[in-house]
Length: 105
Image (cartoon, rainbow, N blue to C red):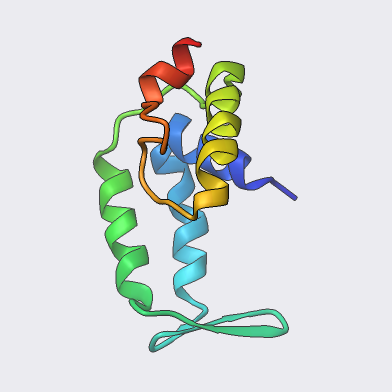
């Protein structure tokens, strides 16, 4: 089984190569209901969004794979510590920190 990041990197590094997976997914839609083995998931868009993604991937150039970034992970941990207790949303922390300032610390 491939992890979510594995699928994302597969789409990034070989966009057209991911299309067969999506075409197989299209066969499982009944209107807006996606039928996976043992479950049914009601979607908002149905197969239309999968077809839209196929169109995007057909014209998407290959990109480098994503990889772990400790500075970004550290910045995210700082944001959680600052913003979590307040229930705030957004990219600026309650102390005035910005994503850029958290990454550079």
